[in-house]
Amino acid sequence: MTIAFLSVIALSLVLALLSKRGHRHQKAEDFFVASGQFRAVLFFFLAVGETYSIVTILGYPGGIYANGTVAATWFLGYILLAFVVGYFLNPLIWRAGRIHGAVTLPDLFRRHFDSRALEIVVTLASLVFLVPLGMSQFLGLQVLLKQLDWSIPPLMLTGLAGALAFTYIAISGIRASAYVAVLKDILLIAAILLTGLAALAHWGGVQTITPAWKHAVQPSLEGDVFAITTILLQSLGFCVVPQTCAYVFTARSANTVRRAQVTMPLYMVMFPFLTLVAYFALSHPLPVRAPNEVFLAVTRALLPSQIVGLVMAGAALAALVVLTGICLAIGPLVSRNLVPGLSGDQQRRWSQVVMVIYLLLSIASAAQSSQLLVTINNLFYFGISQFLPGMIGILFLRKAHPFAIIAGILAGDAVAIVIFEFRVPVGGTNAGFIGLIANLAIVLVALFLLPSRERMPIFARRPCQNA
Amino acid sequence: MSPALRLTIGLVVPFLMVVPTVPLLGHLHVAPFGVPLALWWLFGCIPLASLCLAICWFAHDRHQPDEFIEADYDSGERP
Image 1 (spheres, one colour):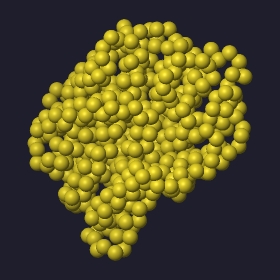
Image 2 (cartoon, helix red, strand yellow):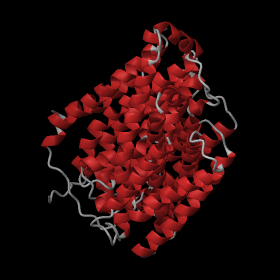
Image 3 (tube, chains in turn orange, brown):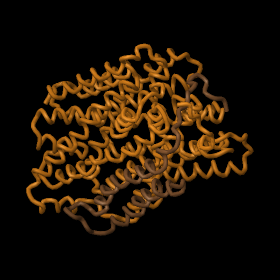
């Protein structure tokens, strides 16, 4: 198991080194967004690589195991619709990025609205809500690395994983991330299909499935309201996730984005197999100590040791690729948006310092927390989705006022956090969704009340066609 | 294909497949092979969503000129 695991990790490092070929002296924009040169295939692998993290492989079956299929329906529903929304919005976000020369999401806001205050608010909100996402990757890595049975302290193992993620970035930024994502995406889908098929082969009769159905949480009106509002919030919010924007900016053209978006839902073929794995664990006696360990427990019970090593390496790479994506989004947030005026080389250097600090913080917070991975995913979307009205302002509105967008983001975040923290009864409605409604109301009311300079929305700009 | 039809097939149909349909199916106590019908339906929506986007691509977007824009990463375009 260990040999297979380490071989894959070594191969990922070789791929990261290969990604540097022809790009030895990278400028800052090449390091962060590959100078917008990725074609459809590499763009697809990078997008898929940064969408399905270790939270998917461990958290999805863990969620079904702990709470039944209600969690599965909104989890699947939002990812599916996020690709659909992305088909229409991402080419426009790509166009906005090119017109404004954006490397980060706050770049777009500052350059479109000519507002430094808006840039700072978007940057700080991104930083605050990206922290739990990194923590969730290390939580997943903790669960995973424990299964390797190495006699190394867990904190040191996650520290090594953090160092590996940083090594990929240091080699060639987002290019290394994309190359490693190819290996990760292939390995992850193979691992899930293999484990799912093994579960099917070892099932031993249809009657044993019944306990799983009995275990599931029964549908309720409140559950439906939560599922619908979560699907709406997260599928729309997915487009304004800082690392989503970062990979959209890597695409060579608008049609590169569209072509990749068409095929992205097909990668979700993994979910029926992950469901199969969760149901297998529910209906068979397996040593499962915590819901997040379900997938690995089934893998270890059904597959030979060396294959288990490959599966675990695929899951570990899932966390590492997403971590590199988050780091590459966070680094320039500080070195480009929070501290303006640095040269390209300085941006790269300071970004790397920020990434190291971020990785260390995430490792430390993961060591203190044991929250269910899916809950952390929800918290992340509470905050990040509040950028949506501002993005609508950039893409479609002529007179959105930057101060209204700032007020909307702050109000949306405050409403979501208060409802979540104080458990305000809202009939099951997702707290972030209520925040988003408040946020949108502020931006729309200001359209009529606050005088604002007219700006040409991205949707109305005629694109250059100088291919 | 008209832009309105493109939006209907690419956006409205996938949303209708998921948002009202899945919770409604969740209330049916039908679970082929132990898996709730709502989840089976969502699994079916995976290729259907891709098909909807493929129709938009092949019937409309593929025939539009692609966009290639040179970016100025140092300053961008001032508003």
